[in-house]
Image (cartoon, rainbow, N blue to C red):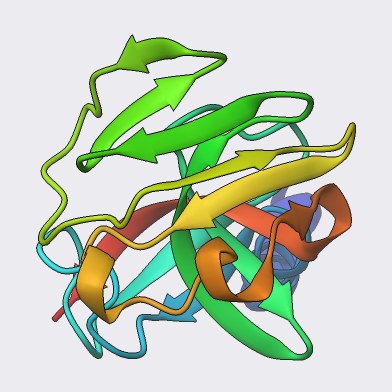
Length: 154
């Protein structure tokens, strides 16, 4: 028993390092918010962690998108196969009004977009200062690499 404890003590540091690395590469990813597109929810330079995406994003989830090797932090508005529309800054999904469960800043110009089977429409909470699906078009599920955001420090 003493020998087993001694071996465990000798290797516990390595076990901790291995656990942290496994969590980092398979469960969490560090994220730094760049820009003001998610204000007031997230601030510029805010640091946090996000969960690697192993499930489908849901409406209003915060997601991390790989857009040509640039990471974007946005909010999911439209899901695959939906028709989304903004009229007077109000969201309509398949012609049904949907109250946004957060407080976006600014107005959203009127537009309408129909999503394909693997497409998500993602926009920033700071509507007037966000480069998002309104500019890039919808994001494919493979581009959404993580979801959620747990702030660590501002």
